[in-house]
Image (tube, rainbow, N blue to C red; front, side, top):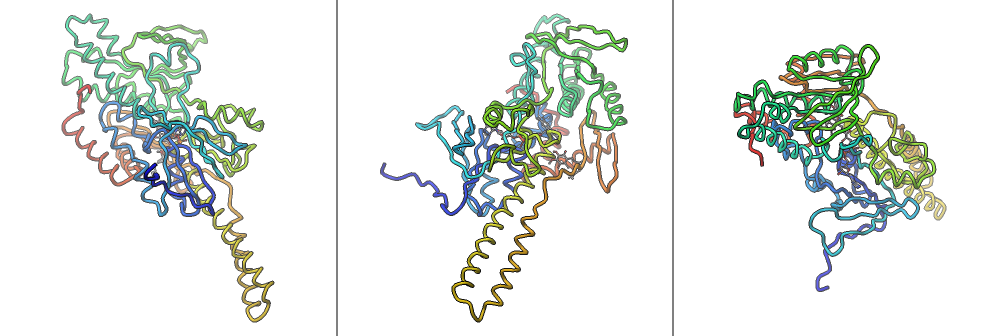
Length: 480
Ligand code: FAD
Ligand code: UQ2
């Protein structure tokens, strides 16, 4: 009560724009937004941006996790006008009262750890969570691969399995179980993780513990008939044969039914049309089988009648406005705009919204200027009348141009995936054509593409450093 908190006062003449999340969509929006036009408030339980495409590499220590994180405060400090950030989770949105309820979910809480944030405009960019399809045991026994903490947990568990397998007098069957790593989900995340695991074993673990040579084993389970469904047929075949060469066991048309602390029960569809149930024992189980809607988003959808038929997330129109609301936009994995849930889509949606909001602010200021000029024309008609009306006309034309904002249009650049033993696949759409390539050269392309997409020069430097380090000295197998 002696010193009032030096809190930054919002400008009452500006609208308050609240952005939820610090992922691909929200950060891409913040990067391009002219923040001086709004009182911008960012809310996320994570005070950093995460470069998800390199997350699978963190599970084996090819890359250290901090190399692919960028603090949101560093990102926001580069903006012209200050932006507020609250490390908090949004627990509910009230579209009628236009407020967001937030709470501090971290370990240390102050006297206030729960409050409300009012908004004039709201952007929902909270992403998705991992889908378990309600399959028994998945939540309890498997590792997801979505956040930094997941990658750290997996890295620790891999080494725990290895050291436990090396425990005195461990039976060969138990060694086989402990060194059996099962990956569920044949999308890019599952494939890249399986590939990284096999690399880790071939390049590091095998040399350190030669007696494990014939025990380590990776199985990749996918419900669909093939892995990497978003890639071309030719690259799918190349990927599957490359994975098999590396002795990764691919089980397609296989649906997991139940998981226990050491077994996975699954049903395979045989070529004959009949079904077979298999039970695999495992040491590590990683679940990367798709996206599910977050509770916050489900709750918001239940409050909006126009969202009642939407299942996979917030249905948005071609300007990314949440259907059935005013002043609420959604982007990325939590929005249903007719595109795949990828970083590429989220980043383009964020850039689109930034442009839209910049234009909206411009429109308002031009409208105001026209209003002022028109009223001055009415008050004192005279010498400058002709000039003023000409200016008004020019402004109106300018207004028309910014008002003619085009709806969001996604431009697909292509898809990339690492498939192990220094090989990658790339489906690139350039110059109205398609280039499909796979192999070692494509891996160089994969590396340079991901480097160029890293958030900052600092991140780029750290990633190159990690690559050189793990190549030169091997991956660090300490279990911290
Ligand atoms: P996210 O990036 O997930 O961000 C969501 C944000 O919201 C986070 O900051 C989160 O902390 C925050 N949040 C969560 N709940 C709340 C709440 N209640 N209140 C406030 N904030 C909240 N895509 C590609 O295009 N290429 C790839 O190579 C690729 N590789 C991937 C690899 C992995 C391992 C994973 C997991 C995904 C990969 N993706 C890739 C997909 C891509 O990461 C997602 O599509 C993308 O992150 C979606 O962006 P987003 O902004 O919607 O959500
Ligand atoms: C991608 C991705 C993005 C992208 C693009 C890709 C991390 C930000 C374009 C795909 C990359 C390709 C096809 C290589 C072309 C390289 C560049 C640098 C344009 O995977 O997710 O999200 O924008």
